[in-house]
Image (cartoon, rainbow, N blue to C red; front, side, top):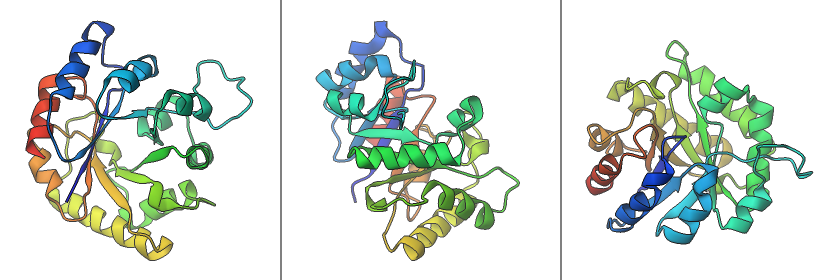
Length: 233
């Protein structure tokens, strides 16, 4: 079955490395769907030169265009960007994005025919049976067409830490989330795992039942790691 591999560059790729990165990734062969989410300043370069699907790391749901430093859905669509990461914990933590903001972004993306990559996850001490439904229900309030959403389960304690949860916990949460979303929304979700994914653990993660792909973070601009991950999936 075809998998989805998303590379979230965060702020890590420098201009001097940009076109070498694009050329090297264009030379990779895979039957899977590859989505690259570079910094906003590189979106045009990737859209025009990359062979892969392109997503943004953020969007603004407002339509009045009066928000300095932000990027609108209209701007993304005019560039040819088809995907956008929404709800990443680093934006929740660093920019105080709450469930209302994430919900509004989700609706705005879907209204603009941009596929949302919706991130969610629990703290290490949380009971995921309680925490995850509360999070998802707030994020998905009044949202239709959830079949167009890519869900990315990212346990908070694994983001950027190198600390991967044990396989049993990942299996349990993935099974629970798949069942919860399918029961409540009558649609089988497109569910990915994210959080400290790299070439050393990709095989263990990608083979877990119910996982349709991965969201890769910190090492996404490391071309050798990207090559290894794509080759191993």
